[in-house]
Image (cartoon, rainbow, N blue to C red; front, side, top):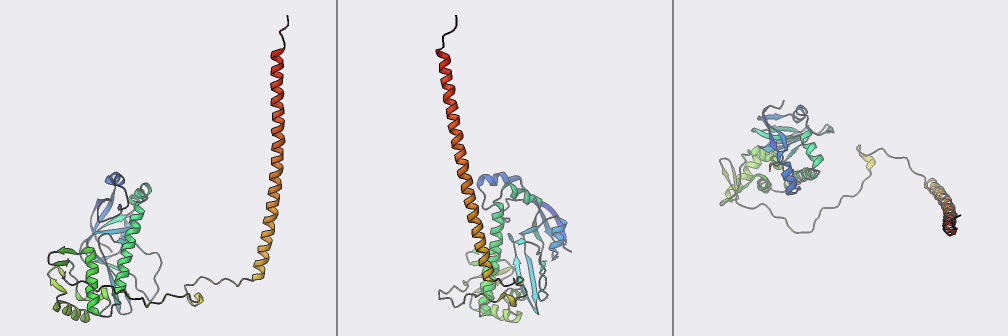
Length: 320
């Protein structure tokens, strides 16, 4: 069970939330008094489903600290680090049997804000908050996509260096001596991030330190050498081609084959009925126009007769 320490509230304008980036200054001023519940989670496993259910929330986001998301396939475990601004949402679809459930763990106290009726009320009044949520999701997915590419680099030392720079983009600090990454990452954690075994990561870190690319510090790492740069060469990745969906158990149920002759006959019948309907509508409209014309002529005749009667009455002298 998730262990929560204290609960307070945080302004929706807090920079860590990044929900109001698409709002105007006037709209942000109106949001000054809107707050969200904030929780401090103690170190240990994080039961996200129970946490959200307890606070009647549909999601949460990290304010301070880190949460480790881990998943295991076979004997290998892969992890993703979630920090300030990252969203925590409970999945609704069950995972396949060969995939383990996602495990969330807080290595140190973590402060999160929960999304419930408070946020829904704000979104109802300021809909562009939704765009802020989508931006957070997009950035989180982009970082995960970058991690996937990093895991495909051929050399482990390149993976480790690129991963450190990727983490530094979110939590690094620029100093006169280089970019400081204030994360105490074990060799095992780095291995799970880049898809390598701990002994291989140890050798990669030793190589990077010897060539002056990174320097180990008490509370993290100092990055001195830039990561591998993209090579502007023609892509050799082949575009995916459609395959027979019937071979997949996730494919939708197949529909019975359609007889082209039946389809053509139905189409001809539909065109015939539409033409008849059009002809009927045209005749009906023409008849209504003729009636309207006759009515207009009668009204004009009546109006002229009324005018003549009024003139006649004015010409008749009063009787003595």
